[in-house]
Image 1 (cartoon, helix red, strand yellow):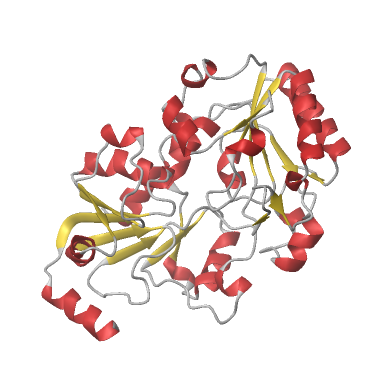
Image 2: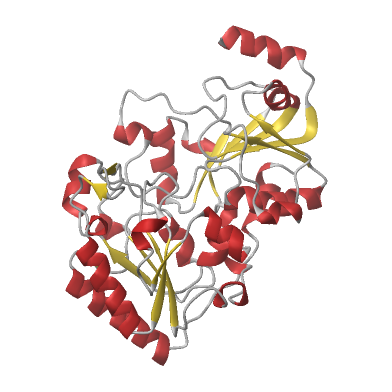
Length: 360
């Protein structure tokens, strides 16, 4: 296969202005940020999808790529070889790295849980020319995780962070109940089993408990908080599980299409975020807004998956593991919002810096 791939890379001439973008899920906010800026620099962009018939997001009409091809189609494979630049999050045809193209791995945020070699020493990571790290101490982590020299890890932020600064609340207020505070809950991926009734089962995690969600909804209602619940893209949660709640709003792709916002665009208009060890933690830090870390199954997760480094070396916030401390800390956060002038940062230049540092 590598020999065949190598022959194709020699026979198909390169176009130095052609860029391939492949993200998981298709058309994520990294893809959106790149499309906004790459067109300004005169690049021709082709998006390679992971599915044959991907859902086309609303925003693609404003910054469309030249073409969209399924990655295993003839044109998907041809375009991959034709492009000089390839940008991916999880890898595309990445067992072989041609020496006549620049392959950029933007991953999908700085990892907190173990990934790649950290998780499985026998794993064969995707091949690429360069990857990125948000912080200097993460350069060594990404270097080891992907088994590349540290010189291949560039100190750059993920382009998707720019999307946090472009949203407006007027897009969603008409579909939400009245509120004083808007939160977004973004838990990391868990391998959750689903029972015969369509409910998550098999993990000792609060989100598996209807009683816990009932208490959260009552608390949010009493505190005049609307909490947008956005599960991980690989999660098996369904909207039906949250349909009876007044103040916990389930966010899926259909909801985002309805309000004409992407994931990070919606996250950017919130007052605070709730998460555990999702990589969006580092991205949301850029906004200067409060973050609540709720991680009840921390011990089980540590045993089953593990972390890149001790969590106390990562989080500035307390790690909350029970419902009482969870509610008490949110009380503290909303009091801080009421009494403090939180400095909201709006620095929409990360994609520009990424492009000019790697592609110009």
